[in-house]
Length: 134
Image (cartoon, rainbow, N blue to C red):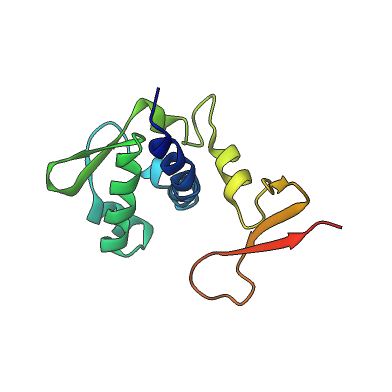
């Protein structure tokens, strides 16, 4: 049984983890990585991505257990990560895209309050809009 603080921290970071998974799936990173370790710089170059930001994203995915980080900034896919590939027989890629895409399917309604996530002015970051239900 986890302590109460850990439980709340898990709830706080759930959204971050979902967004990291979405970024990895949307950028087809799981298709770019297989069992043999591949350099982050090579992955970035093949996908026309910024090398430093790609490395940070790959490390975040590795911290979640869907990739494995090796020496010299190389990464390989884990059995869990295979479920995020389009060619997996039981792929969950579509679930990630549906849940976290531009119009997320998940819109919580709690006690007459509607919460939606959007970016109305196109600024970097994510905005939360809270409205009272009628």
